[in-house]
Length: 555
Image 1 (tube, rainbow, N blue to C red):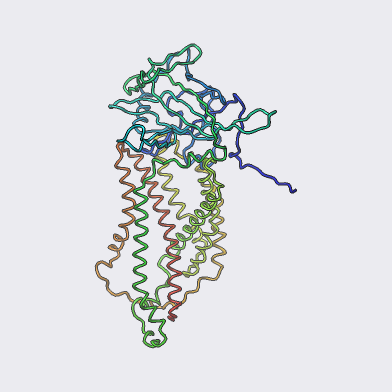
Image 2: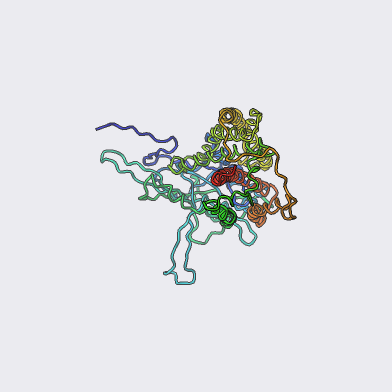
């Protein structure tokens, strides 16, 4: 027999609870698919514990806008609670001022969701949908779905109602142990049923316990933004045993449908990609198929020696561009992005980026982008030398700062607006300083290192000679004009961005800051996607042209 050792990744190890052990309920943030601005839990007048403690967060959690904090909910393992009152002093209800009432009403009209966690499991709301609406009740098929968090409130007939009672339903899995040992429990699901109950319908005693109204006799708790409002914040706890094991407890959350997915936008992007691929394939096939077939005929070698068509530019196709430093810098940043995305996808496929490790994906992406600077610098340096560049130090600095500088500048401007809205999505100043230190302390030296070795390496060999005198470009037709080409080439990117903007301006509530924020994120995604696809397309076209000209042996 051989001995083995095993370990748990920090933060994903199971926690065993005994009977009546405290299960801490923490708050993460408030989110909305309309405004795209997350807020802290205590930005609204919820009941607070005696001491507010924030959890230490990693880089990804901070960038996502998570602010994990403790709550006054008292939950014990496998212990039922029918109704408990929060922050009740001498059985007096909570009074919301006019300013607080207006803020709560504004968050409800903006469709904000509250996100809580228990044992690192996010809370979910069960939705039961019936597929057969016209049939009998017995024939209706019930489809159970879940959505992240719970709604802060709802609106009916131009009135605003707040969910002030939370019915927690926690599922546990009993671990099989020997007879002499005490049973342990593991939390495997966390659900909530939010309710709105009017102050007058709740009966509260001296022990901070309450009695819920029976059936549909109660009325919802209305929030009037023009005056003070009195209400109770209450909750109940119910435990159920489940056959789901701890290792499979995330399956329910991974199958949830995200309300922020724009399927129309995704389909549009896929159609654009296939449309461009089809056009490019047709051009290549129609242009090159006949010429290559003629070059492959041995009996017509003398006739094919005459240059015509696309072969006329063989002496200029590998000529260095006007700005070789910018081209090599953009391609180096594209290689850096490509390597980062490739490794992140590979690591995620291996299951090492568990959803229980909050912010792990974004943290890994940030650090990998910094460390992949050596590969981006190497590719940019070798290409820069191939394009007959000489100022390699300036080229390395341009590679390390051009694309990250544009991204950092856009994010900084957006961050200033988010700061003005007091959103938790705003990156704190210390985190921004840390990102700058990572940029100039890790990425910049690695780009210089890769650029140095790439510039010293042998440049790429071109299959044909480049003429010393550039070929004269004949007068072009009007549709071959540079500005017309820019407009025609920009139709497809504009179409992709227009779809995103359509979702912004089709909202019922449109504000300047959320629209600007969403537009900025869309611009960053378009820029990154353009840089990534442009890099792959450049290298693919470069290798394709090399093979074509090498095959026909033009010299």
